[in-house]
Amino acid sequence: MAKLVFGMNQSLDGYVDHMEFGPSPALFRHFVEEARGQAGSVYGRVMYGLMRYWDDDHAEWGADERAFAAAWRRQPKWVVSRSLKTVGPNATLVGENLDGAIRKLKAEHRGEIEVAGPNLARSLTELGLIDEYRIYLHPVVLGRGAPYFAGPRPPLRLIAHDRIGEDVLRLRYVPA
Image (cartoon, rainbow, N blue to C red):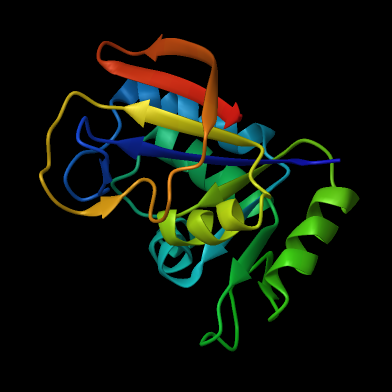
C-alpha cells in the first residue's frame, strides 16, 4: 500500500509561496531524489498548472533542473479538478469521488505518493488520508500567503527531523 505524503517549503510564520523563496541548490538536489523515488503525485488544479513548467525543456536549465524534469515527467500524476477537461502527459483526471479515488490509488500502488498543494492537502487531511506531513522550514518570514495548513490543524506527532543544506530543517510528522 502506498503512503500519501504532503510536503512543501514553509516560512517560519507558516506560509507557502514558491515565488517568495525557493530551494537552495542542496535542497533542490534533495527534491530531485525525492521525485525519482516517488510512486506518483496528486495535484490540485492550481499546483498542477504551476508544475506543468517541467513539461518543456528550457535552455537555461542546468543538470539538476534537467534531472528533476526527467523524474517529474516519468512519474504518474493524478489531477483533482472539477474545471479541467484534459491534462498533460502521464497525468489522469480524478473524478468527483475524491475519497474513493485516493483510497484506490493508495491500495493499488507501493511507495510514496506526493500530495502537492495546501488546498488539496486540506481536503485529504479532512478525509484522514495523509500518512505523513513534511515541512521544509526556511528561515524567512512572509507575513502573508497561503498557509501550509489550509484548514484545521490535525493533531501530529514528530517522527524525524534533519537539516538540508545550510538553513532548511525538514520536519516529518504523522497523524497522532
